[in-house]
Image 1: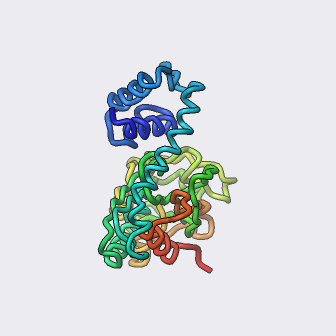
Image 2: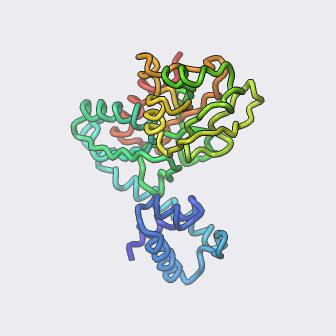
Image 3: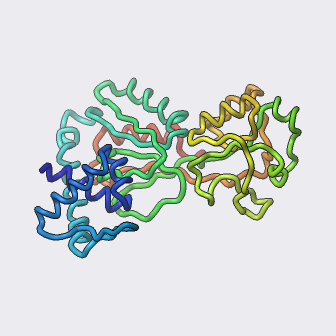
Length: 298
């Protein structure tokens, strides 16, 4: 048994709340996740998780082992970077793992990463773009971009970035055919392009309507912002998506912004990285570049 790997899988199960979610996070099958947990339990001679058909919870031994496993994984991460911390001056080198949400990562983080690679030729980067909450410690991620409120954590540093501003737009062809809604209340009579992964408490919410999430009609929905953008450009409906994704189309006149004074509230964005008394140069330079490029404007 690979003990460290099994520890990382167990921590991921505890953090995500299910074998299926941990399997996605660890890029394993759910069967392999279960095998890792069983092997740990056999090695320790105790149950780590109490499981039934609907939920699971940590046993007393599992909770104690989880705390110790986190510390072990963090020590391993530090040991793996000792040569980078104590090596030749402050020259960034080594491998950097970054996680970011799909849309923001594609539009803003990917170009930033390529600039970083040009500046520091001795560093390689893995950029994972996915709309899920990654566990930086358990998954060995050096830095992550997160949208939305953060849970309290003494294991991570959180640096605020510019807020994630949403826009409501439609193509000129759609507005000519269906008319231009004067307010969010009129969206009920229009075809709206919905995101499949949005929580009911997110998305189409406007101050003028008391902040309640709108239940809207539409013939097309997708789990990918780019697909929704393309549908809007083709005149299929009204789209609500991040400003970073729609800005070029708005500037070129391909999309027309709506309700510019009554938009959903911007969402907070943070850069997260593990708390470390001796951050390695590859991470320090990456953090500096992110803050210079995407940090709050004065």
